[in-house]
Image (cartoon, rainbow, N blue to C red; front, side, top):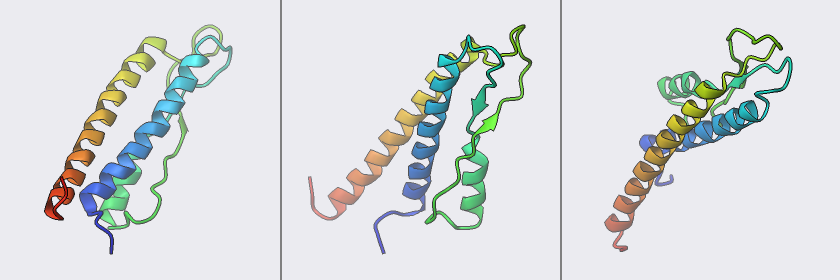
Length: 116
């Protein structure tokens, strides 16, 4: 049995999901001018909720990449550059918050076992 409790497992999966989503958003931004490019998203939260409800956090939680349902521009591209950039920053704040919480939890364990 490891030290990772449910909270730490959820934070771990959230960091993985946010990392994958950041990579997909960066790809969307890089292709904002590519004709016929279809923007993608990583709605990992639903899979994380499902895993949490079924108490199955020890396995890898899926991080599905889906096509975004937005209207294309005149070139058939569905990337909304401004929205992608704002969402990328919001996800970065979420990621930083999860990392800080994770580190706080590790610090509690460290102190409990007599570390500094």
